[in-house]
Length: 117
Length: 113
Image 1 (cartoon, each protein chain N blue to C red):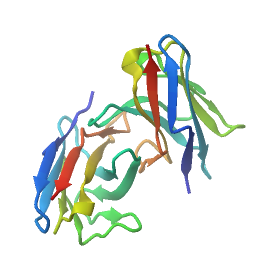
Image 2 (cartoon, helix red, strand yellow; image 1 turned 90 degrees about the horizontal axis):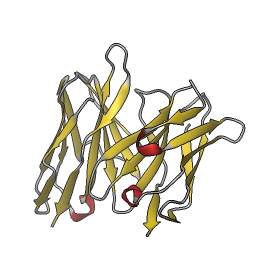
Image 3 (tube, each protein chain N blue to C red; image 1 turned 90 degrees about the vertical axis):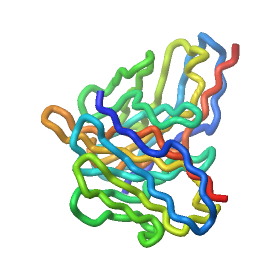
Image 4 (tube, each protein chain N blue to C red; image 1 turned 180 degrees about the vertical axis):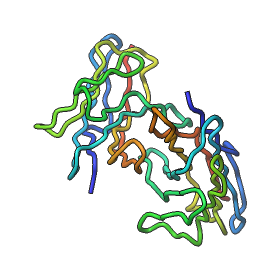
């Protein structure tokens, strides 16, 4: 089946620094990718929808200047948490849409755990 | 707008017993419905999805779910629980396979020996 990878799988950073998380579709082209955030023992909340070559669409309440999303190619989307603070500590999960012929489904990455000290 | 409600944040069953995880949805259009499983510190794995074809959907690991429009439900079942089924289960809804997915609050399934 289709595979979506995320890098890094976990990261610890100091408050005030920026962290970049990569989401890659390994064996298909993804015109659309989604970014979710999951706090401990809670559900996944959609942060933004990322379309290749265009600006991301952010969900209400998500600060676009804090969570920068870039989808420059059909296989890569990045999420940059700028000036991270402890409250940004969370599990970030991406999904990628495989819209190829005969299929149209989303595949989820394994997630990235961010801890901000 | 779409939403899903999962009844019961924690369900505990004995090994070998029936598993029933409840999910009700709300959607203004015919929905796509999903069940995902998440093991600790891991991503999501798709168990099954409903896309307006057969109302009884069979998934992986012996799970199945039935779409009932009259009850706006999409409950997940498994005839006989196994210890390895212990995990967090999420019901989800979207407008299509390619649209953003809205997740329920999750149900933690515990299996008693």
